Image 1 (tube, rainbow, N blue to C red):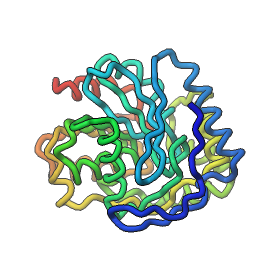
Image 2 (image 1 turned 90 degrees about the vertical axis):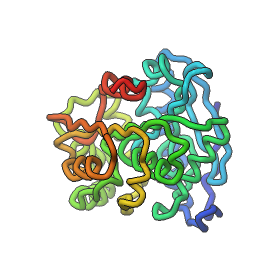
Image 3 (image 1 turned 180 degrees about the horizontal axis):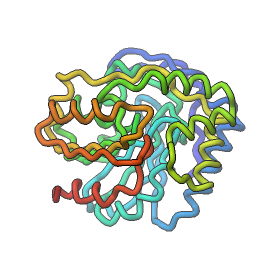
Image 4 (image 1 turned 60 degrees about the vertical axis):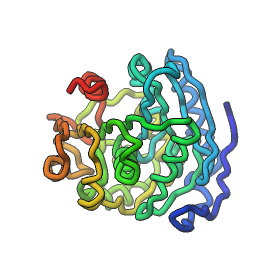
Length: 301
């Protein structure tokens, strides 16, 4: 499916007020196409059945990669910032053995969805996710998110806890403040094009061995996409205590972006029985953790 997103949206009226969006989050139309062409190339390399859908919401078209039997319980996946649904391609085939998977391209990010960026201090993103639930006829689902995507899971669950069965948070933002040193360096490096993208990649991945195709795609995105550099709000205690569903948190001890020790302590203080894993010799990027995630989602942990 190759529908064209509307990248000329200046304002979006929402239940939480009117928010202003940039004319484009991509540096050029050609750059956007490079990112999406590589997305499709990566997708074609994986052998799992899927359906591409563009869902119409009040906040713009939202691209969803749907996979797995319809009669299984739904699991929604939300990738991190400066990324897209390709982040989940290596996990989808295994997840679909247990779940009906919906991998969502975040609005305002480097994927197929609309370029709308909402006020993060509002409930806008929670309302957007609720519309996705409505469009797919979902009454209750589990959520898994990475970094900014994990923040969106937290936000939605705090506003609509009755709609969430379980949450998996990977290197989550929104539990403790993002490290300012990382933000300043991202802003600086983002002005340096390809070399800046390489520096950001090094900060995020740390000592991890990165496949060459991943490095290549990260560089394509860095060269052609303008990332969100604003402050990601930390959920207040009153919101966090609304997370009455089972919550799993997985993060790396060497994470340069989020304050992992503080996040882990806060979860243990505010939530009834969070499942917390802090991985040694791991940075901000979390992968190869389905052996922990799937049993948790099935209620076996």
